[in-house]
Image (cartoon, rainbow, N blue to C red):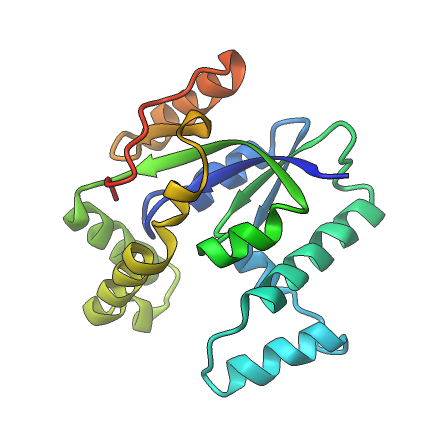
Length: 203
């Protein structure tokens, strides 16, 4: 059975995590963030050890392993009755991170809509990421070079995912608005099935 899914998509600092957490508090939505998947890896499992092997060497983790880790997290949520696939909709942020992952996940999820949290203002993204890093006491992440690298990675690796899914499924939300207005835009699109304008060139 494929999981009914909404994808939250956008550059670092666009507010995916904030919106995902909020949507996850609404009945019949189950939120899963890729960051949470990596933080809860069981290194006693074969796939967990494989992830550790790559990451400890500073190597890029293959897409197949990333998706397997995500699937293990979802399976655990199903077993714990936290996620009920027959009645719940999955809300994902941070995955798929590239077209390769999107292709692998096609066999597992039925993407009903992609919410593209668009924030073309790079300075705003810089400011948000810096503030968040300082607030969370992650001083390395507040470094401008680190932030620039993250945004460049999004541009080169993640953004092409927007052209992978059909434009009918993509709803563009202005992520420069306050979070409450962004949420209202997402919920309005969920409620009436309306699609936003397809803008794969926006950040």
